[in-house]
Image (cartoon, rainbow, N blue to C red; front, side, top):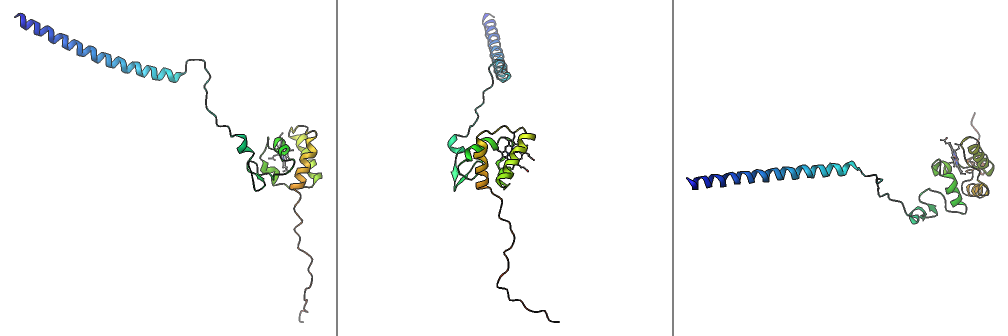
Length: 157
Ligand code: HEC
């Protein structure tokens, strides 16, 4: 009778322990889930940091075959000033695709200053206009050359 009792106690203890173990596992899972979500909530006041790739200067300044790769500008005196002042609002392509005389470059700049909030370029204005008119002058007028040495023939009546 006593032994039987003993066995019963043993059995109950066993069951109890197995339940405690199960509860432990469940608690551990809940704790892990909590930690996981709380971590995502970012409760601290630390600003989120993100690694941003900044192109290094070497890359930005790369010149190949006389062309500044990043902007497409021709590498010539005044290019740096032009990049610094003329690529802030629009693409360099807008500059490159326009070919003008010095006068018209000047008036385009004046127009942007009056209507588009372009700043006073100071002494860079002359440098930039010189760069533009040297490298982006008006295309030669594409009119055919005057005919010469042509053998004319008479139309027959
Ligand atoms: C403050 C802003 C700003 C800056 C800096 C700027 N531009 Fe502009 N530019 C504009 C705007 C806005 C336009 C009109 C764009 C459009 O029509 O889509 C424009 C248009 C142009 C055009 C086209 C004009 C046309 O008749 O179609 C050229 C060429 C040009 N810019 C050259 C330059 C040059 C050269 C510089 C440097 C001296 C420069 N821009 C700097 C704002 C600016």
